[in-house]
Amino acid sequence: MILLYSCKKEVDKDAIYKDLKISSENPQPPYNQLKYKMIFPDTIQLNKPYEATIVFESDFDTIIEPIQYIEKIDTTRVRTIIFYQFEPIESSKKTKGNFVVKDSVFVPNKEFSVKNIVFKEKGAFTFCGLINDVIVFEFYDDRGKRDSVHIARRKQQIFKNVVVID
Image 1: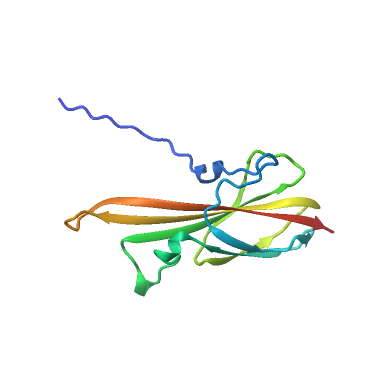
Image 2: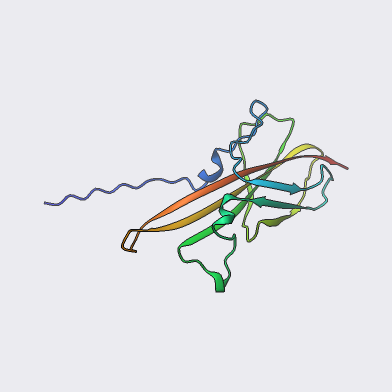
């Protein structure tokens, strides 16, 4: 008699950003694994669209480029970068990390733009985002046979305080 057991692991599709935090008690982001620079004004106009430029560096840059071109495809390593943009948080409110995803996009390069950023209320807000840089490696045994796949991940929370005026 042969018995087979199977388990189904429930995976929360939003788990990638559920543990993000921003609070007055702990202003240091838990994910600070990339170097980045965000170009975005400190003071912006109400209901006017803005564009933010984000430039980042990752440890993975020395392994594989963010985007692969047809003539340079590496079949043993794959890299994907996703930027998650969250709804802005009003600075006067105390929050425990209840982020709401507004948009997400694949990032093709180490410099990218987030367009059409519009604030519909006056006041002090925090722009929130997350860069999720993932690389997948294929590992081979001594005989050259693939024996496993490894995943490495780097995350960077992005916060920018802005003041919205008329």
